[in-house]
Image 1 (tube, helix red, strand yellow):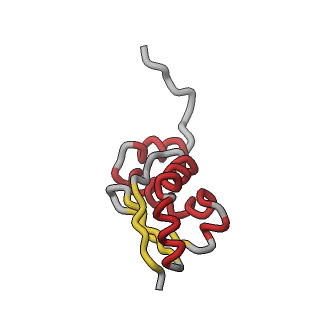
Image 2: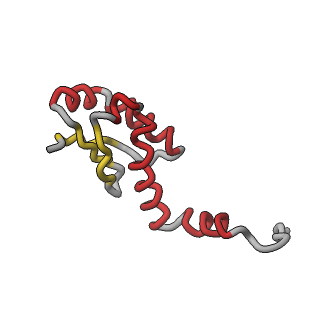
Length: 102
């Protein structure tokens, strides 16, 4: 037998349930990654990078200030993907596309 609710649901809970399986919910989860970038990678890397966009396939585009940092960060890509996904609590980022900031 199913459990019955004991009153109205909270708006936040109802909205979270609604978004959980929707395409909009997936877009929101991807967009949250941009806000988590700096805290996930730390202040030194955050100072020379800018998370710019994330595609539906999980590719995070990150701008980098110098060629030297771009090379260094590309070698660290796997660990940075893990850090960002750990910070968000979801496996949203699959890979990082690095581009030089102008």
